[in-house]
Structure formats: structure tokens, C-alpha cells
Amino acid sequence: MKRLVVTADDFGLSPEVNEAVEQAHRDGILTAASLMVSASAAADAVARARRLPSLRVGLHLVLVEAWPTLPAAELPDLTDAQGLMRRDMERLGLDLALKPAARRQLAAEIRAQFEAYRATGLPLDHVNAHKHFHIHPLIAGAVLRIGRDFGMRALRVPREPREILRRAEPGAAPRAALDTAPWAALLAVRARQAGLLIPDRTLGLAWSGAMTPRRVAALLTHLPDGLTELYTHPATAGGFPGEAPGYAYAAERDALIDPAARATVVRAGTRCGGFSDFLR
Figure 1 (tube, rainbow, N blue to C red):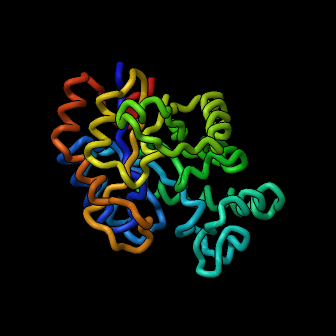
Figure 2: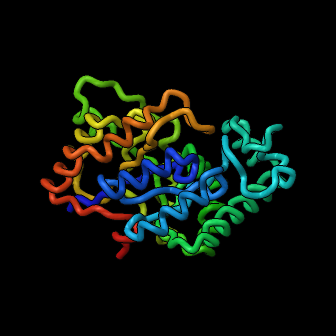
């Protein structure tokens, strides 16, 4: 059976993102959203989620490039001069390996974000991380350990088969995160050992920020059996603080409300929902 979770990342980043999430769930194929608990529009996102009980919401851990939940002064090894989580992921990953203090700060920040999510009162459908930073083995270990205390039951594992991309767009040469593949494979093993539900595949990595209506419809046409997560970054418009340069936010929103996408899902008999809808 084809099972599909269609997720919007960065829920709470801006009103434009939140508006697109609500629209894509009401009028399109979006089934889930990942909340940035300390982003500027997080309260608005939570209010919208409460009005949409069928929207499955999870935690989008922010450990890079955006706002921490704890005061930056308590995270000197993880934040920059602007008080944001550091952008230099490679160096930060090395610091986590070399500095016990950095690991303690990481654990405290991850716990604070889980606690902030619990304070919303929303059921926790899933967990993932901004820029997929949870594939780092030390971060993964902290997420698995702390998440257990908060009822985490599903986790994104960013593995995208290139064959599906080639079928969806013949002749294309999609970029592949081959350097992260071993870490994603390790994460899959550890997540399964922890009893978590993970997707068999995650679509949206190679074309992140460019999941156009044509591409999404094509990916849905070639969807294999099993559990697939297709993640997107919709917004009604760009130009908001924290946006990723070059991302086609409105086009990704359009892809989710495209009647062709819904028709493809229905025609294939695909069962749609959040991760919690597929838990045994």
C-alpha cells in the first residue's frame, strides 16, 4: 500500500508560511507541519493548528541558523554574535565532538524545545530538525534520548532514492547529499532500535525550495509502496525574515493545492495522513 505524509517545514517562521500551511491543508494535499517553537510567528502557527485538528503537527528542532529557545547567553558554544544558532554546521559538529560543554548546551536546548512544544498542548506527531542536523550522531543521540521523555514516536530520516527523481524528471541530474547518506543510514538503524516510526524514503531533499507543481505531481505519479514523506516549504509570498535565498515558496504552496496532485493521490489509492495515523 502507498502511504504518504506531506509535510510543511518551518511552520511558525512567518505569517506567510503559516497562511500557506493552512491553505494547503484545507484546500490541498498537505497533511502535516513541523513547528519552529521559537520562531517569530510560532504563536500564530499554534493558533492555526488548533483550528485545524486534522493537521498533524510535529517539532522542527532548530539547532542551526535560527532562533534558540534558551537565552543565547546560556548557549555560548552554539550561538553567534547575533544570538542565533550558528551557521557553520561543519565546525559546530566538530565542537560538539570535542567540547563537553557544547554537548551539555545542546542537550539543554533540545530539551527546552521539546518542553516548549509540549506547552502548546498540541499532540506530537513527529520530530525532525532544521537542515536535517539531527543526522549528526551526537545530535541524534540527544534527540533520541530526550525525545523519549516527551512521547516522540516518529522521526524523519532524510534518505531520497535518486531513481524516483529520475523517473519524475527524466534527463535531470538532481543533486544528491551523498556525503550525508551514511549518517542517515545510521540514524535509521538507531531510530528503529528505539521503536520509532520512520519513513521508507523522504522526498524533497534534492529539489528543496524548488518543489514545483510539475515536480510534485510527477513524484506522486511514481510513488512506490510503503511509507513516503514528501516535505515542502510553502509560503504565500517571500520577503520575510529568515527566508532561504532562492526558495520558490509560493510555487511550493501552489504544488500542494494543485488539483492534479490531489487527483494523482486519489487515483493511486494512496492513504494520506500524519505519522501518527500510520503507527501500528
